[in-house]
Image 1 (cartoon, rainbow over the protein chains, first blue to last red):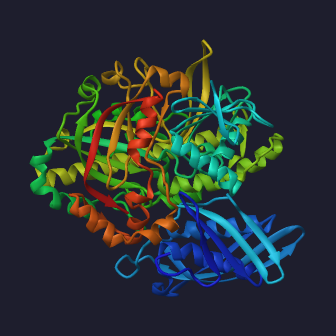
Image 2 (image 1 turned 90 degrees about the horizontal axis):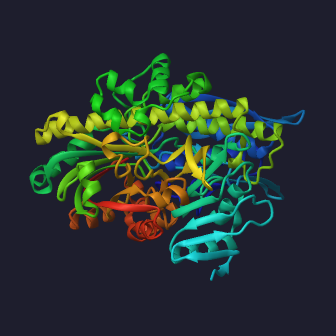
Length: 146
Length: 488
């Protein structure tokens, strides 16, 4: 949120934290948008080069939980590897009642001389969490604890 | 006579309100707040209900084994499951441990250091001191602490808390007596914490973080309780430093992990969950045992974190003001996101309870053995953060608060505007220059963060403190004025 919200992303009012709404034609595209929305709060995405790739692979029983698992996994990499990401390509498959997401996030190590830093997100909450499939695709909502 | 205004809430005193039990509520909700705060809560309740603090109070009041009431303090606003400014005490046999009652930033809290210097003695060095603190205390996204700990050492931090930091040369042995629980909560088994949580903490011990965390050089603006202030070693015009931070990424990951694990436990034990963050397990269950152990680990990590930062602040005061480390005393260090077993008097009976405080501070009145000996006659301090531009307060617990709120007090002003609205309304550079014209110097790693944390985004701290005092749950000891602020 240093600059305007990334494509497919809208930030919602929440008293203490930040609500996130993400849209996509498919569930995978909507989760990609949510991931852009998450990292755009922390750095300007246009400053982040695609210097390295992180393979993301998570599963969950519902689309809502898949969103939380994916964002939480990417967020943890910020601390574990010191990485921030700007581009995401993920696919979602459903088999035997489980949603499986796999794909890649591209970015680079945080460089405070080059990246304009914003908020540090602490966690992905379940407050107001929703994933709705409509005629135009998926709309996902969650609240980020900052 | 009680007067109903809306949402079923009834006024029972100038700053005391009751939500009578309805539906699944096992006990009433009990709120301590002024009329303006209650009006805001009832308006929220009529709107989007999942972001309603009143609904969250009702949900807390519906949990198994809750004792007396679900309590909200004057800085109440919507949180995750529990409201911020919320207190819930549970019977150890029938009650539950609730993830939302602690939150993501386990044992986030405030450490206050007192210098022997007066404001006029520091003023010539203030610019240098602020700059030195900004450069030497890691803060903001992407900062790294000077301690780089492998997992085995992280385990020691989780077990030993602030004592680990002191043992490794960060701070003074005397500090420990002036930290809640002596700086280490027992029962912390590092095996209850995931490897991922530990890996995330690798470079973060001794970092401030961002958001509402801060480091502030302050002047004691007014002494409001001479006896307590003397016990705490505070005097008018004195320069103090407050550090507001928590358990950093480790605590965040514990919260994330246990939201998943406790959801399974809630299903296993057949506990209905109105909001996902309310996931819980019976206190006596193995699941709750593991969770509370992880909370103790997170709390100890936060104590260690503030201990390391206190050391960095002392080093800064030595470099800039020529003070020896031993001249900078820890007044107190206390958290405001925790769940701990405590003994309380309930309807004339002494009972051990699991007390969750989410965005609320333990505020024990006089004669409790948990307080440092030097403070026991007056009760320990509770440290209330204001905003960058407004006062902070040192309060203390009261005998009345021991029965009304299980010995709990407010932790801050509480937000009035969302971050989105604040960022639209305020501009970081303008906030910094406005504060500078009022004599408050600000150093910040994120200008956006400054806009979101602008004083105008918060409730009036005077109103919140006033309600806490008027309702008798806390008593004012000293008022602090910001001189220099470091933000992530």
